[in-house]
Amino acid sequence: MSQSTSRTERPDYGIDSPRELRRNAIYGAGGIVMGVVLYLLAAGGALGIFFGALSFISGVILLVNVIVAYRGSKVGKLHLRDEIIDSLSWRGDERVLDIGCGNGLMAIGAARRLTTGKAVGIDMWLDHTGPGNGADIALHNAELEGVAARVDIRPADARELPYDNDAFDVVLSSWVIHEMLDPDDRAKALKEIERVLKPGGRAVIVDTDFVNEHVRFFNAKGWRDVNKSRPNFLFFAPSYIVRASKPPK
Image 1 (tube, helix red, strand yellow):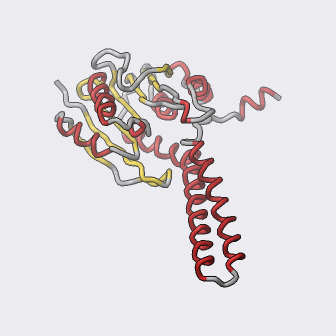
Image 2: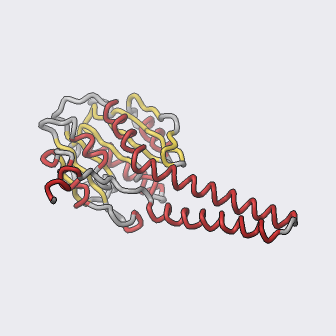
Image 3: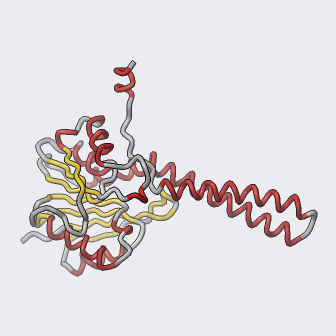
């Protein structure tokens, strides 16, 4: 029985912002119920019908948001991960850093393209990300994907990375820098990416907010092939991919 379960177990990359989704689901359902109640109590009154319809529509919008975001967490972000990994050329011996690795999505995706290289995932696993998110889960996912020997997961702060200069060939980051509301913190994270990335190395950042800051930073530093993708609505709110290559010495 345990062997069968082990064979069928799949990696779990988690639900993004689970508490927010749960809250929106409750508010959405409540809005729909309230809308119906107000409509029934309106007895033809225009004001009651108006507020009933407003509450109902708001509830539907919130529930649609929840459904789209849930599907984005379970399906969409895996497709986006594969698109990003496939867009990079690989030798197999690269050292890769995944900043804000969560349950290991990007680090594991990169490790699947490595032979002698290593993918390192770092995160702080903050409380607001909710349960079911942590280093042990990321390591377990790596085992399930058959890449545990090529993955290293550890706690670290993106603003002060514990790595030498020019330590990585590729730096990835997905949906984490926007969590830094202080612009000085975001600038520190970008400077750390610049510091640890080898000359000629590639950076790919996926995020929902502040992406134009990333573009301006890389352009100001003279990086090559700096570009921002079109919006991707896998979480309802648009996500963008910023790509850039550090100039060789």
